[in-house]
Length: 200
Image (cartoon, rainbow, N blue to C red; front, side, top):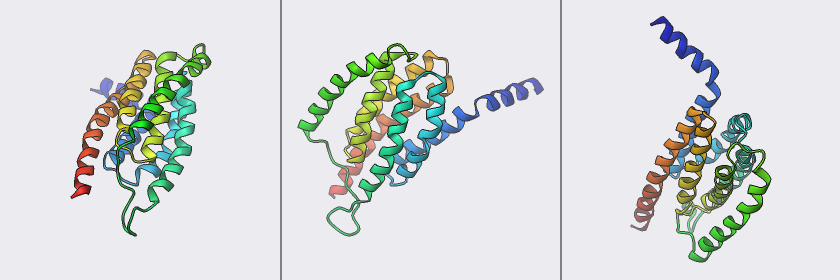
């Protein structure tokens, strides 16, 4: 029993940053799932530990991405504070226009090529790093616009990120992204229900 407690204590002391960041990530995804304004202040804090973890695991695209998350969380917070048609109405959830959806996908694919060239020698798993990074940039823009389809970006990005962390044997972070992947699927469905309720 004492050996088990010692092992657990050792693991927690060695992985406290990953574990606490994982819990904060779950809080952020939950607030996003609920379409809560509070996701943005949490989103300002969350990138800081992820930058440290990603740097340690040579997930360099994710380092740059979390700097971007920090900035866009501030911008998204401001955008969501903009009112709708009445003084009490919050910005509504909507669908992305089809033309913008197609344009975003094409642009993302084009951008992946130079990003891969930059990361191919430094990253621990370049292709997954690139996919996660570029798709997440698009996802944050779509989230700030409160488009339901931003969840598709998180489904792709969380899958790629989980693969990267599994590759470097950072299992705590990998599990965090796998849980976030499941929440992204549920989030897409939940936002659909919120849209239907708003129409009533």
